[in-house]
Length: 281
Image (tube, rainbow, N blue to C red; front, side):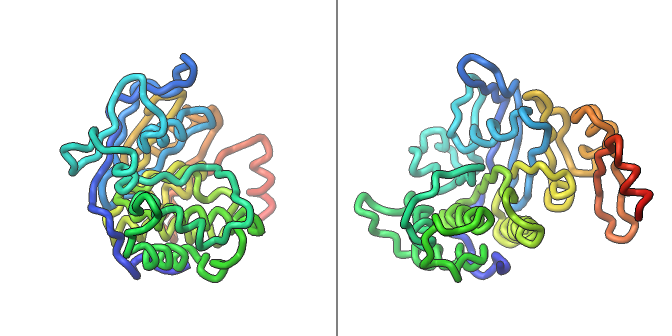
């Protein structure tokens, strides 16, 4: 994959925030009064145990899950609440965890789906579309498979295609739900590097759900730790990802240290057999 600085996204710089969001399914509350703010030019990581409400909160920011109370506000647009779904999609896009895989459709055409908010009724009037699609495939390393059918791809390849589809939308706010799922180590790191490029070079506001706490510490400017539907802590990684806070939230001992060589914060869950790995080195 390549640096995202090769072409500047079209979208206007903006931030996004959720204010006192209460979210649930069929009368069961999943998120209880959560507030979150995504700043332009920053990466915000949502972390927490399974079932803590991370994905539900992210979907609400994309206006795909209506809150029972609270608001989602797009900063920099006084009439954001009145935006149609298509207009909102020009400003905010979500890369979800799962997608139905179309049959017999080329990678290029799937990435082109990301241009839907810019196209007219008959899929016309999108002069910037071809360049946006080419850029999205280039930076995600999918250009070489442009003519392949997506149902022939591996899980990791398909994940990169869906990321390219989101990038082709060229919004000012990018939301991603576990984007490193199914990827090997190389592509995990390249996805994280790409998120930093988009934030640093293009002022994109990024909200990303991550299970790997070390990835969150490495890529994020701001971390939101969720626990049972509530925000347990929010702030810079070093303030949120502490041994005491993480151990309490996850219900398992988690050691936290700063690597003396890289100066990166690293976390280590401690299980009954963790000592075997340490003593065998």
